[in-house]
Every structure is written in C-alpha cells, then in structure tokens.
Image (cartoon, rainbow, N blue to C red):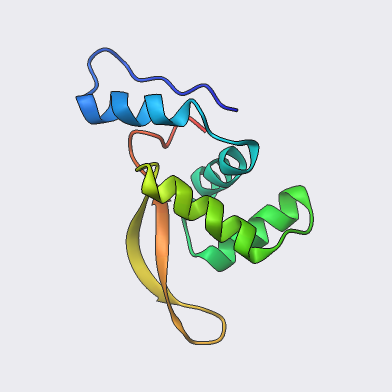
Length: 102
C-alpha cells in the first residue's frame, strides 16, 4: 500500500483523494505509479509499461485497476486516441491531487 497525504492548505477534494488512496492495493499502486511516470497513457500503454516493469499480466487486470482508481478520483480522462487496431480509446492521467503521491 502507499501512504498518501495532502497539505493543510490543499482544498477539501485533495484531502478526500489522499484519504481514499490510503487503501490502495499493491496492483492499484503500481498502476498509479506507472501512470505518473508516463504522464498520459491509454490502457494499451499502461499494460505495456506494467509488463515491462513487473512481468506478464492480463490486460484486463490493469484495466480493472485503472478503472478502480478512476472511480475514486485518482485518475482522470484527459483525451482520446486510437488503439493499435484503430479503435477509439481514452487517454488517462493521474489526478492533480495524486500525481506526486504514487
């Protein structure tokens, strides 16, 4: 697990995000750390980065952890792109309140 914090001067939303990040699983923390490293990434890029850093993984595992992080506000959609197969997809970024905490 990671230890997320917010400064006293941060807005309430930052404190809420920091509190929710206290209970990240190891896989969620890895995905958030990779997204911080990549800055902006599609699910395909996250899976490739995860496999390079941690070994083989099911793409659905990474997508599920990314969605969980998105649901708690740790990750946000910042754009759209296309997959290698030409299908539309979303581009993600760590939310500003969590970008330095993974």
